[in-house]
Every structure is written in C-alpha cells, then in structure tokens.
Length: 139
Image 1 (spheres, rainbow, N blue to C red):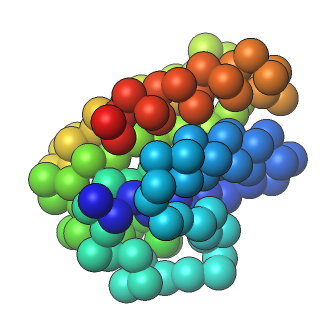
Image 2 (cartoon, helix red, strand yellow; image 1 turned 180 degrees about the horizontal axis):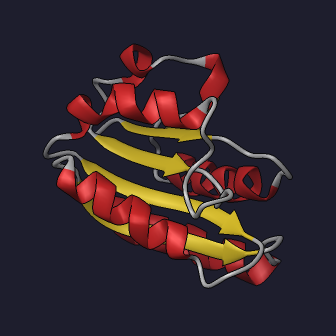
Image 3 (cartoon, rainbow, N blue to C red; image 1 turned 180 degrees about the vertical axis):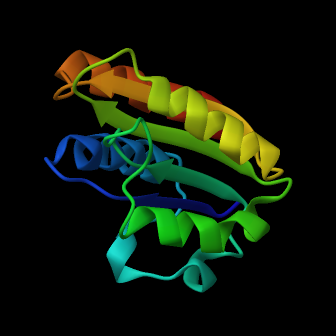
C-alpha cells in the first residue's frame, strides 16, 4: 500500500492533523511524507492507492480556493475507486464544509473511508484519536 498525505493549512491546525496522520502511517512501517499542496502537483501523487487529503474550512464552507482547489480538481480523475480520508479544522459553524467535500469526492468516484474534522486547534487527545483511527484504516 502506498499512502499519501497532502494538505493545505492557514493557521497550522490542519498541519497538526497531517503530522499526527504521518506519525501513525510511519508507525506501521509505511514510507510516507506530508506534502504541502503548493510543493507538489496532482501528477506527483496520482499513483498512490490511499490518500489523506487535508484542508480547513474556508469562507463559503469550501476548501481553500487558490492552491488546494486547483490541486484537488486536477487529482479527482486519479481518485476513482481509491481510498480517501478527508481531514481539516474549522473555526465556526458546524463543519458543513466536510459534508460538502465528502459529497464532492464521492461523486468523483473516490471511496471516502473516513474523515477527521476538528474545531479550532487540535488537542493532544484529539490527535491521539486521529492516530488511533489511522491505525485502524491502514490495518
């Protein structure tokens, strides 16, 4: 299995979740790294068979529009029948962006097998829960 982690962060909260995911992935012996979305292209990661995609909620209950959205749109054809876990943080509202994003990925043909949405900065306990869930997803 080739898990790949790609994220965008504004405040650092989503990166904290990405780091927890990476720690869990590596603890299972997989080679992986966190990819900040502006440092790669969809072509760079299209051959992965398990994706962790992270982006916080932005205005309009959507993913970030200037870097993450173009990457995501380019990646969508490569997500058909692939396992995907979505993650990110949000400040206000009830996390509607995650429901919208999950629907979008499912309609694109991805097999969304999990999601992590954390309001504000993740606590140590929340990050441990993320790690535990990742271990289940990859085992």
